[in-house]
Length: 291
View 1 (cartoon, rainbow, N blue to C red):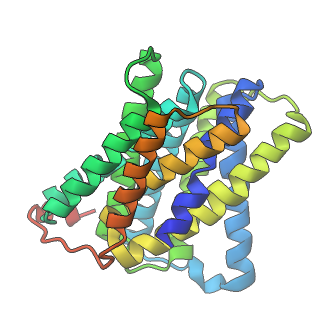
View 2 (view 1 turned 90 degrees about the vertical axis):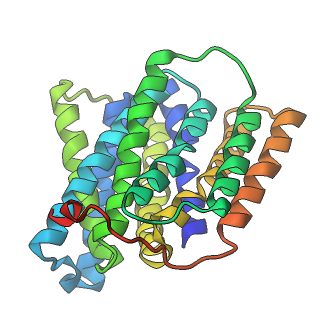
View 3 (view 1 turned 90 degrees about the horizontal axis):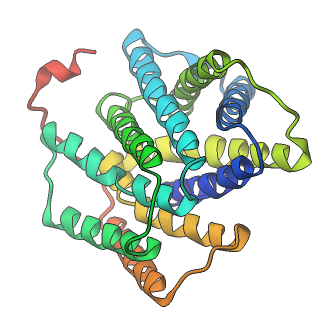
């Protein structure tokens, strides 16, 4: 499940970057993505398991909070893609494991030598993949930094409070909250809309079906089984795949140094899945559980 989630998510940045550079408004793109994805998840629930929408008040509140955080993070990520390359955005997003593992450590989960080794290999590999040096847009980097915080909190909430719930249930309510956030942002922006044409709609379809609908189902299912710490440690693999798609579809090319970084990323991902199992934590700050 985790590997399929990483594979599905890896298409998001190249597709979105290509659509945005072609003239698609970032907020409009993410709004169309989330609204259509939520409708698709809702239709799946109605067709397969109507009872899956049942959830207690606590679970609903946490799921909506997670969705609000993820929706804000996604908006910031798409806005950043208008300022920085997809490869730079992927490098930044690969820092999510540091955020997630730090949050889990605050709850009592052990930060082991194995975690450190995986992160060192993964982040070092990403650095080589992107290439040392170079000018970047600082505003875009700032947007990505805040997005990382939002994404990390979202993944931590899934593990802390939503593991007992069905993946389809959590996916629906998180997606619905994300759709509300991005739609409000779109309306505040003045509801800009232009017919994106066949290529634009194809980009939206790819983002909806692969990088939102399937990827979120895989991600929630994976976190329920192995925890958000293990799930986050597969981010370097997602980064490698993203750069591969950017090379194939956006014309980017990798140097020998970058290929060496890719090997480090793969090594990190292999270590991350070597000892799959439920993440453990010993809550220290019990007040955090009173949501």
